[in-house]
Length: 408
Image 1 (cartoon, rainbow, N blue to C red):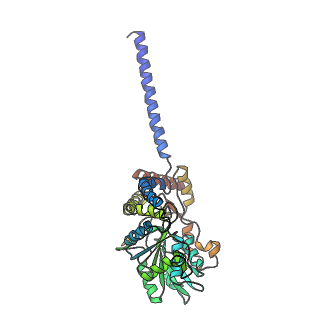
Image 2 (image 1 turned 90 degrees about the vertical axis):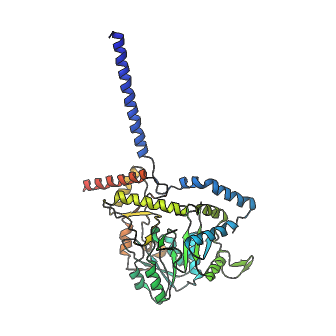
Image 3 (image 1 turned 135 degrees about the vertical axis):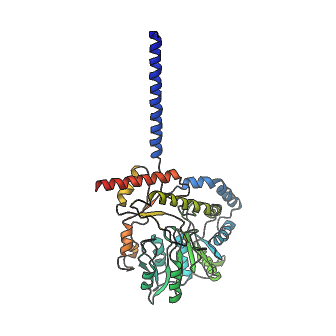
């Protein structure tokens, strides 16, 4: 080979090697970038984009007709959601807190009454009781499903007790058969806080159909969420349905005739457009949530984490995927470094909040709720999560747990 040809061959070999290194570096960088893509706790934007055009079409019809308050879309949604919950009636309301508040008022709960509920719910449950002038009695929960301990509920009943509000926390139904049995024996009303349990079931009965009234939230992050606030109350009772409709609209049967002390708690027509659209997708989204939960179980069942336990005979709808570990803060911080976002639902027992510090707790101080509040955290959970995203979250958790073991 002549010198020029030899030099040319070397140059080509050098160039090919450099190109190969460059391509491999690109692949590694792309992999690293993919690994650092954010995994949010909830992804509302992706879901909203999928239904945007249909929602806008419905909203345009409302705008063109000028039907902004209790338009026909509200009634259509109420009918659909009542059928979905397998109840006779549904009343659209401004938010889930209003649903609880008006449910209590419709059942005659007021000054001097006590209402038993869980000590680990969102504050709205107990706030609604206070709005009526009644006193919340905060009861501890089971450690397996984080829902009301029925034996403690029975121990909390006295002559002032008028109602029980079980919370179907995180999307798993409370033990409704036992709670309804207690209520019947003691002549108590039952209001379901189903704000996180759209479509959850015990057998073939859906949450919102067990108690006197079921209360739902359509806050944007819920399994069925609006593009703002929204709520509903479901019932099998025609009289309660009528009473709730009066309470939500200034106590009016007809305009400017106020038959009782009412409120302004109506579901907005534009939000009803969103909810009507989403009703076509809710069952599919629920199945996807359950699939994500199954993937987490496959990946994490051999770790130290305590995973959600779906009780036999119920359908958990996984509004949240809540796990438990005594070193949860370190795990959350480790995941955050990898752009994986978790939450804590909820970080404090209700009894520690200022409005409830004088409430009766059973047992005193809510020992299980208090311990859970220091250990629970919520992993990313939304219907659009992919198998790869779940695997990345799970891998990050296993790495964090292994690091913690190494530190010890």
